[in-house]
Length: 288
Image 1: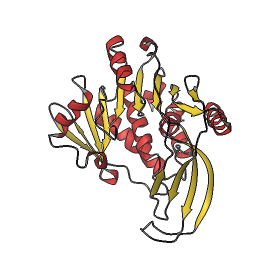
Image 2: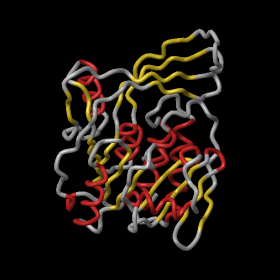
Image 3: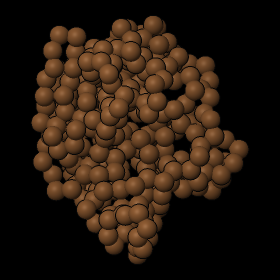
Image 4: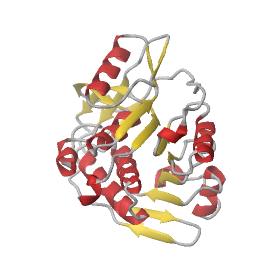
């Protein structure tokens, strides 16, 4: 707890922010099945909100780079996110509608995501990196790798953390995070060698999460396992985003990587025990 009395960090998130429509099914999905659902209404979601709000509650200054449409849903997203403490001044408004993201939930807490086709997000010129302590990438925006490289070139004290993309695009960073399912069928080398092909020579740690089995962190010298934190699963949506937020928080406070991963596991445990994608009151109370 004493670490949270340290000065807050200025954190820039490049991540999606969504309006999620929740559909709660009466049974697990299966091909050709017929299902009843309850409409769970709209809620704020996306990696930008799911990662950013925990960091806001941990007293960091968090700015979001994303895009939403110039419509009523886009207005709702920005108003909701801003009210909750995210700085949305760098969010781009494209000409068109912001489509809802459909989250289909089953009674066992698993979810299927049906997302709209997004317009291509072209990043503008990079910001002044000297004002940022950390930069997190969880977006397919064009130019993300240029921003990451620019951050590392112009501010050696700026921590760059990235989620592994769904394709083979580069992710220059100090810490790369992936789930075990992200790795399936993609890694024909050692995990560390694979991560270096994505993140480059600045890479210090490669974290691979595996749900309730915990996570393994790879470095050039070794690998270490950090257990998951047990929780009663209510909704798995946003667990990976909360995990990343906990890791970023820990590293911004100079925790060793395994301690930062434990913090991530703890934040993820609060997320899965909450019936929302954004972190719930349990995490907020923990951070008070």
